[in-house]
Image 1 (cartoon, chains in turn green, red):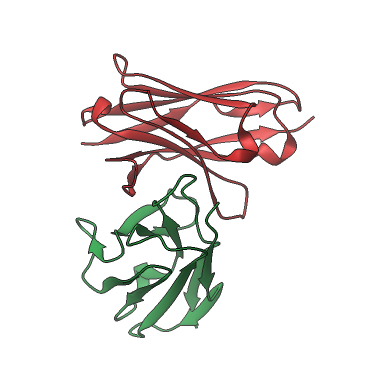
Image 2: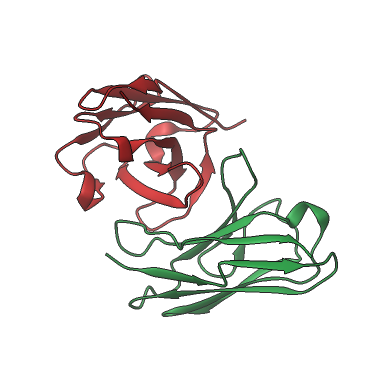
Length: 107
Length: 119
């Protein structure tokens, strides 16, 4: 199975901060990398698909980049509704493994 | 609008069985791969299985092969997960989700159904 490693596991940030989360795959996954946001008690929602494509309805302050094994999710200016846990997922090869998650909370 | 509604969760004893269902609406169900993903309490996401739109392609996480079975009924717009020989570590919220292809992201998720395995 392809292992997905996210960093950091958690971070504290303030409204307006720029936040960067990284995800590394144990082997090349081309650009088949997706990012999800999950708030407590809710199902995850898709933010970014295929490394850099913004899902419909997702604010443009979210962006993704990368290819091969190294990927990044950036929130350009953190908003109150962005405090949540973020997961990366590879969809190149089944099983479509997830990273362990990054919890973003209020500093 | 797109809806995925899971049902069938509950409390079951170790060694027991459950069948989860996912009712889909608002899109052409047979055009989509369907996926089960689970999340143990306080833990991360674990991909369980997918099935292709026609039901001919199925993949399971290695650790679950032999105990769980995925199926779908396109006439009923429904996805199923049959879970046998349940163990305490199968306790989780089980989500169904849709994907446009084998390599696509899971672009819409249901609200989840909780399965608790305990004596």
